[in-house]
Each structure stands twice: as C-alpha cells, then as structure tokens.
Amino acid sequence: MGLELRTATADDLEEIVAADGRAFSITYTPEDVVAIRDVLELDRFRLVLDEGAVVGLAGSYVKELTLPGGALVPIAAATWVSVAVTHRRRGLLRRLMTAVHADAADRGEPLLALTASEGGIYGRFGYGVATTIPVTSIDRHRVRLPSTSAPQGAVRLVPTPDAAPLLAAGWDRYRRAQPGEVSRDEAWYRLLLRSWGAGAVMAVHADGHVVWTVEPDWNDGHPRHRLTIRDLAAATPEAHSALWATALSVDLVGTVKAVGMLAPDDALPLLLDDPRAVRTTDLVVDRAGAGSLLLGGTAPSVLARGGRLRARSAEVLARADALLGWDPVAHCRSSF
Image (tube, rainbow, N blue to C red; front, side, top):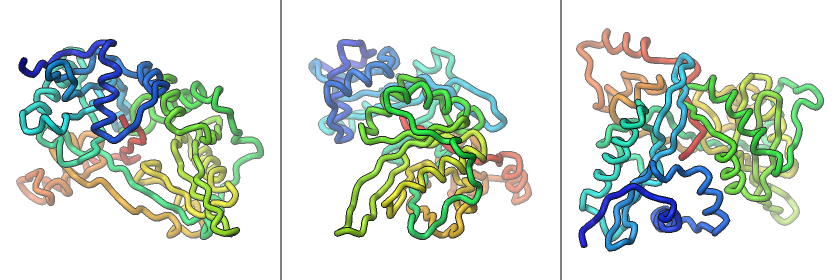
C-alpha cells in the first residue's frame, strides 16, 4: 500500500496527538486530548498515512491578525507540522504544506502564519520572519517597582475556574491594537490554563491581565524563586505599569523570566530604576521573503543586508524603510 494523503476526521484525533507527541517530545494525557479537541478544526488538517499509521501531519487554526494601522484580516495559522523520522526525504512536508495552503485559499484566507520550532525550514514555502520572540530575564533584586503607582484595587487576583472568559475578553481588547497579534477565544484560554498548571496565578486589570508561575528555590534559607510570566496583555500604559508592578511584587523571587512577553519597543526597562536589570538573552533572527515586511517589524535595509532583498539605489532603500516601518512595532505573544 502506498502513502495516502487525506483530510483528518474526529476518529484520527488520538493518533494525531500521538504523532505530535513523538515529533515534539510532548507527553499528552487523556485530559489533554479532551482540551485539545475543543480548539482543533480537524477538517483543516491533512494527514499522510502509511498502512493506516500517521507518518505526517499539518493543519491550521483560523485566526484574525492585526495589521499595522488596525486592520483585522483572517489568517490560517499553520500548526502541528511534522513528518515521522522514518519517512524523511520523501517530499511529504511539501505535500502537506501545499495541501494546507490550498485549503486556506479555498476558505478565502489571504495569509498564512506560523511560529516555527526550527527557523530554517519554512523559507522555501514562502514564510518570512515578521516578528521575533525575545527571551527576557529580570534580576528582581536589582530593581524597584515601576515608578507609576497603580490606584488601590486596580489589579485583583482571580481563581482559575473564573479566568478563561476574563482573560479572553482582556486579550481581545489588547490584540486589536497590537500589530502582529492574533485572536484567542475562551476555548484557547482553557487550553492555555491547562498547560500552565494548577499553580498559575492570574491577576486582572480593567484593561488587561498577567499570568505567572513560580518555581521555588529556597537556596538554603536565601530564597531566589524563579517567576515565569506566562501571559500578559495590557491595552493601556496604566495597565502595563500596574500589571508589571504586581508581578514584580511577588515575594522571595530572584529572577523573573518572560519568553516573548516584551515587545521590541516595550517600555518596561524605562519604568524601572535600573533598566539594565532587564536583559534580552536570545532572539529568533532568521529572515526570508516578503512576509518579513508585512507587519512592519523588519526593515527592508535589514533584508537587503541579509541578501533577501535588492534595491536599485540606497535612496530607494531608505524610502522603503520609511514607508514600511510602523509604530508600535509588530509583536506576537501567541504561539500555535
């Protein structure tokens, strides 16, 4: 029997989850599968089967992307892309991506996007890096809290059972004003809450929220717990300041870590008495194609220096930089 490419059905869910777990070294529980079922539209997924076993898969979520200027457009957010280690170099990835792209076109979705685990793979399929994911750490012992004090009661903690609708509502207001960001619904937040675990703490402001977890490290009586920001949405500068003040007030913390939470133009370092206590320790910097220019976060001159863009003259390149730049800088906290 040859390799079969077909659309996924509900009966394939457990095999899809198992294949993804093997590809990305994730252990899914039966409860995880139930939560995942609520966010997957399986008719958007394509599978390659070998004698009935899934050896390749790719799909997409339907999302809404915020463009510079505030326009909202539907996109296919490509996801769950993998080929079994036993079936490499057979063109399966190209077949899968072609099928997912065709499905998006048939649905009238003008753009595709993805967050890549390996940045060198997707340039040949027309994807370019339009936003980056900074890994930021803050030395809690070196900073005082943001200088703008929040009014008493501006931030409150909420229990997990009540969190999903509150987080989804706050996110929707934030993402509509943030170029590069995508939509999230309550089902998406229920899945995120599950992935963050029972120890996640949620603090809500009228104009946003912050979620964190803490890994204890008592350090022989000299505590230096590690706090990780799991999610942050602030639709106003006041909410941004108040939410960071809340997270940085957690006792016994030595280091605060935030993966992708700070946009390139985030004002947090300027709110602290020691801006150098906020350090960016890693960036995704691969660039490919016109997709890099769409959200205004990558300058044409940068693409030119990387050999991805050519201009007739330096003057043309300067005009392109001025035309395609944007404030605020595009940023995406969502992974999919």
